Image (cartoon, rainbow, N blue to C red):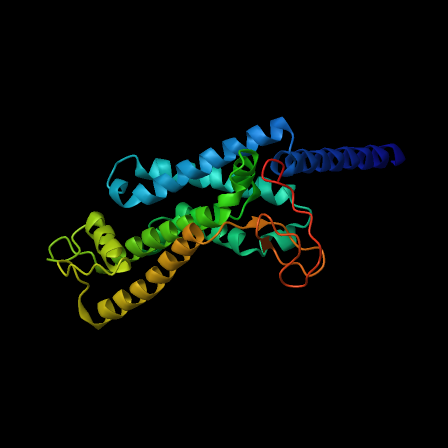
Length: 273
């Protein structure tokens, strides 16, 4: 009896050890800076971008006979990635409460039951936003010395996410193949870009009071994102260097003192930062 108990305890110990080894290995792959980990993170980034391209093209591919197979395959990839990232985290509970993770879980649900969440499928493009809040997105850019353009890149991505989410909403809520206004996805994209840029050609409009209110919201949010993008492009470049005294994040590249608290800074030059 005692021998069987010892064997059971030993088996459980071995299984626990293997599980902890798996978590440790995944943590190294997702978060370390080794050449192997960087190659893995770059591969994950490429797969994420390919998934996002599929999400953007989904309205045009929905009638394809292979659409559901692709949809479920991407659901499997996303499920594997979420599981691996959960195991790689040091605190799964805290990790699962992060907004990007919650959005990814919602996106996974829309992939698993596409027929029930057909009208919310356009929200999948938020995957692009969640991707930019992952270290696997920024680390390859940092390696190539592009982090000084991080704010501009983020502003462009935010604008693209807004454009395609709104396009999906307009297409889902207002498209009518027999109507004179939004007859397809391209019309929805055309209307969104014309509205966001306040061009206002007037050849495509949304019907009813709801359409007018939606157009107003699109213009207000869209022009705000354009202003943010313009600021990040045209204002003087800043470097990301937290002040050790007050925590101010961005400073001029040649700053000697923090402009908020006056603390002496030691900002590395662009070749080493």
